[in-house]
Length: 305
Image (cartoon, rainbow, N blue to C red; front, top):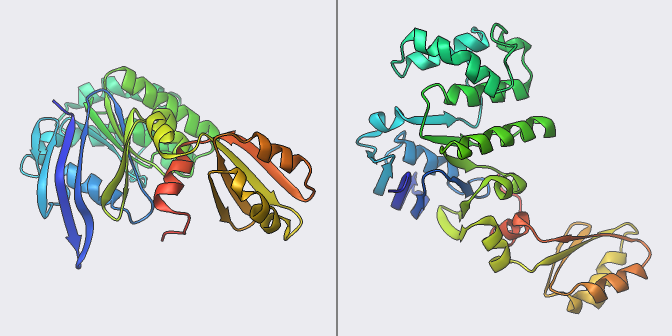
């Protein structure tokens, strides 16, 4: 049985269909990614799946419970890391965990026994009595992750868990999420960091305007959706790039320009690299294609608000 399944979900706000016939299934013990640009419907989809918002139509089953009818029972075995930290600033780290555990009806003695393990998991073993005002943003984010584990959930929803964190904090959270998956937990992740999705997700869907536009593993999507090699060319002489693109675009399967950068998507980049070696005023990077290239191809380069 799927840890989470959604079938033909629809939700409309003020005449705007935010979720438009979305269907997917999440296998237990995997990390499932929900990707999309701003306004694509990701947060609404999460709220629907958690029973916080009722769908206009469609079916949701979360951990064996029909949503939203049986949402309260389902959430007893669910952990949530929200997009924005909502920790209580008046409490210490340990007190935040204790009070949150009470919402699940867990006896205080049981919560207190778990607190050292939870704080150690979050890299906060020495911060039990620390007030939130003394914690860095990364520490608060890790405490929020520890709080989501108070009820020993089967499924953990993570809404952009590493936004605003420095690379060290991001890597620590990635490591902890991998540990949770290894322990059999199911992770449902939204993120704007494509490298994060590529590292963590077993499968993912890309949605835009409330509709699913791609589904598969990161490796599968890269292989199916994008050319294998990318050469990014940067204009350092103001005008040279446009001339180069016009002359050499036939050497790539596809070329995209964004400001002072051109992206050449290639299957065989050797001739293009040879031409670049003879051009002054252009700087370039040659790399393998990645999930961000897929995401940009599917959703476009225009800014979303």
